Image (cartoon, rainbow over all chains, first blue to last red; front, side, top):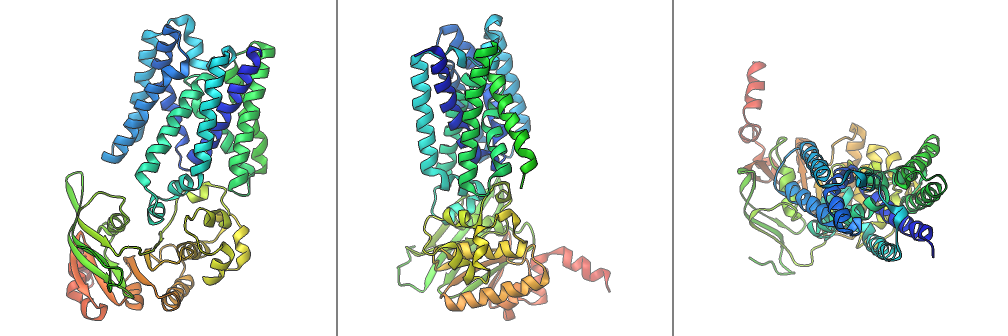
Length: 253
Length: 234
């Protein structure tokens, strides 16, 4: 198998997991949290590149720290989220550019899905598939908790546990996503496909499946376009998904 | 304390206190709810009514004890669900989110006086009156013993309000319900409740509405605003 097929497989599975979870995140206005979380991964990506590790592995501890912080702060204080995310964003970018050799900055900023080896691809596919299965298994409860914590609690759902699990899923998706689109564009991977699907979906099933389909098609098209043009894949994937959104927009219900 | 499954008491709250950032938003609250009772919790905005509901549902940390009768099925009717309109969710989808539903969406819609074909409509397309009935139907789909109801009149026009009262009274009779209704609306208290608990961060009064809702108690409940208002009109 060629590097291209590894890139296509990893890209498609990661995009599917991100869009599926994104369909829950979008309705709680959580999708944009993936942005600062992505920025927070930049120092991790820098370290991974310095040590020759997979960028997702380097990113994961940092994004995990980010979600634990969000969970802790959300539960205990009323600090304004904007101030906090701005702080996190600035710290992530600043530390990354201190550590990062400038010739490797492109990988951190726009991803390296075109350099996917067999091991990376297998890991990405396995982790993405796990995320999809976990989200599928808990989808109704995640959606209900998103709609109302009170309703979920009255249904006997352990809201705190689900919120933590939800944030951990976001952490995994962001760590995977930085490989595909880099540290600056991860929010697009979770937000744009569900936003496009929402324009045309009549019910929840169409919405979730539509988001995954648009995510996968964008990733495949972006990787192929990158292969043909030598332009970076990450921005191409994001622009293809935005094209889907623009096409779906006139059909908004 | 513990409540036995065949006790008349279904909920016992003792010495409840909820503290946010060092400030008590609820304190010294002790009350119980008997099977078949309709307890309204009356208080001005900011009196801690929503905090009380969230404590009863176990999603805010509190001191004191809240004891539910074991096995009691609770249906919760929220005031509004701000995020639900962001989702392409049909009424039938919404019912599928329920973990313990015993009846399907069209049957439950019929129970609250809505046309069963509304099940295929998107939640975002419903009127506010229809949406409130859908929320009641949703709560009833789990065949609850007790309904927790947050502000039944909010956002509904006068004609809609009338029918929601009638609907609640009918459901109460047909389904052997116990109800706990949070409201700032005196009309709800008079029409529905067997007992009223007046709350303004602390309990102000507690008993049958006709005995309890005296001008003195209402002034204590609503504080200086009522005094000031009456003064101006003299």
